[in-house]
Image (cartoon, rainbow, N blue to C red; front, side, top):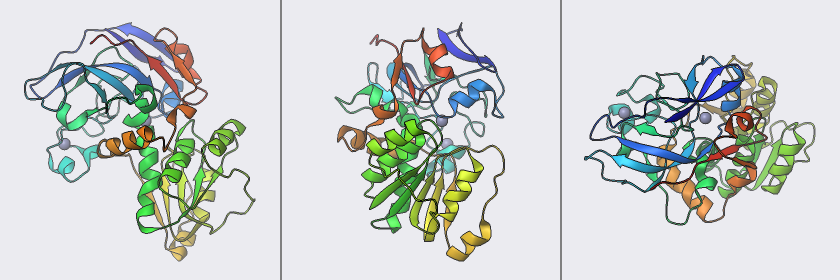
Amino acid sequence: MKELIVRGPGRLVWEESPSPTLSSTASALVRPIASASCDLDRRLIAGVTPFKPPFALGHECVAEVLEVGEEVTTVRRGDLVSVPWKIACGYCAQCRAGRATACTSVPRHAAYGVPAGGHWGGLFSEVVHVPFADAMLVPLPPGLNPLAVASASDNLTDAWVAASRPHAAREAARVLVVGGTESLGVLAVQMAVAAGAASVDYLDDSDYRCDLAARSGANVSLDRVLDERYDVVVSATRDPQALYRGLLALAPGGHCSCIGILFDDPKIPLFGMYLRDVTLSVGVCNVRPHIPKVFELVSGGHCDPLLVSPTVVSCDEAPEALIQPLAKCIVVRERIT
Ligand SMILES: [Zn+2]
Ligand SMILES: [Zn+2]
């Protein structure tokens, strides 16, 4: 089978490798049919992250199930499923407490497409091994377009959680999304609108993304001074200064979800935050429990992820398309089941 391998900075190649086999009666083999680039992928390919090549790329996809172990009860051959980015067992104490991102049955940070906790393959590959099929895979409801939810494995669901969670304690919230990565900011705009925000402002220096954000329901004509104005801020930027500006924009009692990954330690206006009694949440998203809700939002037309996925390519075209994606890039493969 073929795997899409990051070989070195800017070097992305399809390579032949042995097809995985079922590792246990709880495992499954799946074949990705719509794989999306995560906003992290471009940096993984460019070699500007702590994760060193070679490794198989990809941690967002919808796949068809090829084979399941005899203990697997929730999916069977031919089903279309979302494959969450995180490898997790579903039964350890951390998983049962809702912290599958800290699953203790596998090495810390075990995930697809990022060599952070060992090598688990990538979701652009032709065949992917899923060690805990019932705990990980989420079947698509009938009629849902696989391309529209290719990113439910990570970015799309991350955007939903970041934009909706702070709303639980804040009705009619004024929301600011600080954009900067390829898709997360615009997706967060759509999800804030879906979560019932009173208003959504969008800050970004890219005209292209500002246009997408405006089409998603955001106001993009902002004043220069935004201080103490917003109940919810979603920071989807890698720019430390933009994060800083977002934190100062929080109103008293506000909540900032930081979902843009910054590898350095940014400057945080801690005393100003203390005086306003605000919350900053940051952390990898445990997407799996939220994927059914995201399916519901997409099915109901409450968000339009395809707006940030302008490029749909074949496997042959993938290496070139993924190096400089405009926003998201989706790689498709025909079904065989
Ligand atoms: Zn990701
Ligand atoms: Zn676990």
